[in-house]
Image 1: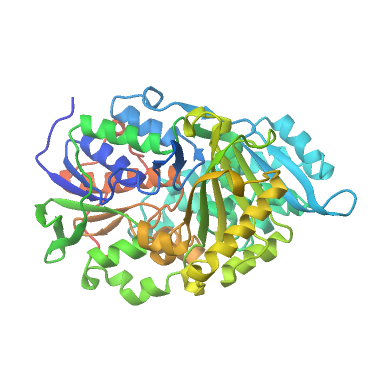
Image 2: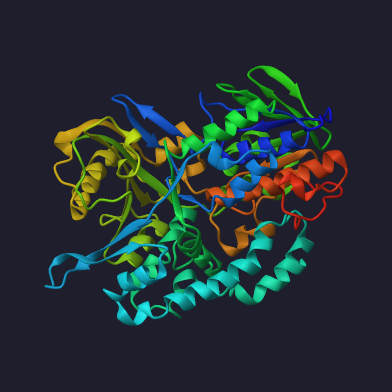
Length: 527
């Protein structure tokens, strides 16, 4: 039984970070009002039903490392598995490498069906690079150690500069090699560039290049292989809906179709919001939204001295994505699994084009065929196909109104490399989301779908802080620790801990489901 404290918190945005924070704050006895401008919870982590009975995840489709969310549910007296059915995928995805085939013709140069079964994975890699297969276990062992040392850093708040010299940070430093990129670090294990891609394409989850992304993030692929890739039955939105349902039962006031106009301040302290024309007073405010888009709109520049408009404008951003959500009559090829990634020939050039603002004409493509696992994603005899292409964000100045139809045609043509033929005649539903829609329909700054870039000078203390100022807190991919569902859930635990300790004036017990490594917050800092 939770004890109510009489303290009130408003959370702006019901994305995964806002929902996780609402659960933790309600568990601590706070009165929580969760405000969402959309008609459903989840933000970009939602599943929508399209005409014809097709269901699509809008954003994330990989569900990784569910233990953090399971811990949050457990702290609320519930079991995650009683609310969401998670199917572990094996193979977890199918990697297809474009290039010269064995006869020297343009086509497919190799494939890897990735699996957490190490012996099978070694056999898959050995088919294209026998020498590299011998180093798989070494890669796993070293990254297991790296994650062990860096996990406490991911659980720690960085709202003070001295946090950069915390015991956890100092212990992790020998394993981080900040001067190496992910690709450079992987060269220590794997000579074949295709094998390195199998363990580095995951940097695209951060919207970054493996040739620039800090070597720390080799742990992304390790997490997949060690802890699995899951599909929530019904789509990733089923997780968001389950969190919202539990939050409502715990007394959280969820208000949909309501826009927040601004955060209210008394002096330097946030004291509420104006939402839907109503003034809502609160002891603290938490913002869950795309940082560079939402925070400048809601928080006056004077209340964010470390992130003034000029700095936000100069912030380094992730790439964007060109999306096709296709309802298809008829089946997919028998060999098309749940997740398939076509990795373009000359992948490094492909990534360089995106980073430098050039629209790639030979793009890599990710395809989710959720019906391979989950028959509820489309009507019988039909397929819901999710297609994602990494492209430059809007700072590149690409005229998407003039380009989108020709780029759509190019993407459909390249899907033939995966055996997906005759799509045009079978499309019964179609939605395109290009970078301009990410900006206009989903409030994503410059269409950068993975938020602020995760380079060394935009991580840890240099990233927007979980405690953004007196009475004001942030959660989501734009704040520490960063993007990706498990990382955002971890960020919710950090932000909730700081808020609870500030309001209630005592360290939060471990039973609250919050990491004990987060330092006690005393006093405020305007970020």
